[in-house]
Image 1 (cartoon, one colour):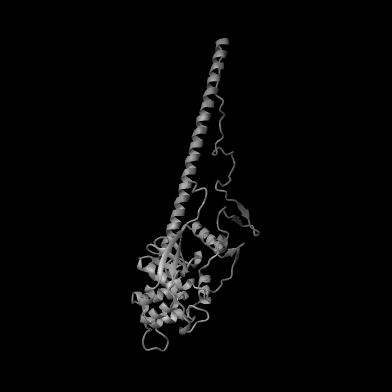
Image 2: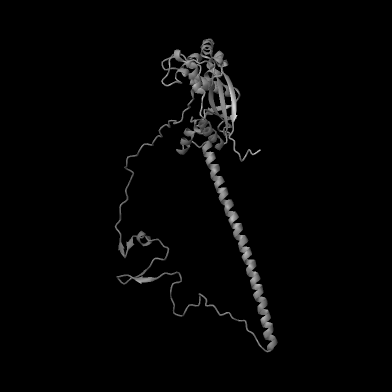
Length: 370
């Protein structure tokens, strides 16, 4: 299941429908049909609007021509009255129409075929008939003669003795889509909800929550670190704290790499609506332990610093895609407490972390003059 698309994993159903093995329609096909209908509707609407405009222009032209014709008629009547008044015995004949020759009035002796057929004489003196316009070119050849000569009979191929091929059996379709879970999603399903079991190759039982938690923390580094070198601000631990927090609040959390953020927060899901918030996880070291001047404390503080150019770019991108930028500050506990709570259990360790949420909006002078 891709994390860069809002579509559902329906490749197998679409492939079966394409090969004619299934009559069911997927959501992508329904959307494509709806878009085609919408496009055709817009085309027909534009056609009707164009016809209405043309009809209006035609009506205006007719009204103008009628006005011109009426003015010409009035002028002609005035002129006629003037002539009649000067000569009362004048007669005017308006019979200006001339007889139109009819198509049936053909001259005598004309024996031409009205349908356009013409006769000709073959080389042997026998009369022949030319093909009518629009007739098939092979009409004469189909009768078996060409210029009075018979065509040779071509034997037909008999396929009765051919080897009958067996009916091709369609090969089974291998699904090219498969479910992909991030470490945070997999651990939440296994630990938070208890609906997922993760097995290791060659093992007789699934991995426990503690083993899975330690494994994800080790492999969040590159190269993977041993269990003795784990820190309270492990990449997996920081991201899972934020993931667990938003999932507990009812948000649908998805990776936000296509928008340059850590998570996208959906109200109902990617299928129903776009994400409302784009979250960026920032580790926060506000505990008094990290305010010391030790080299370890200085190393932790460097992870918290971000340049303003980075924040400006991220905020600009989110404003263009109409999402609210959410800075999620994860309060990191000191190493001693994290190790102590980690031995007691995962729940005790997660309680040591805190969450602070800050919404950042882009300030534009034109929209905020007040």
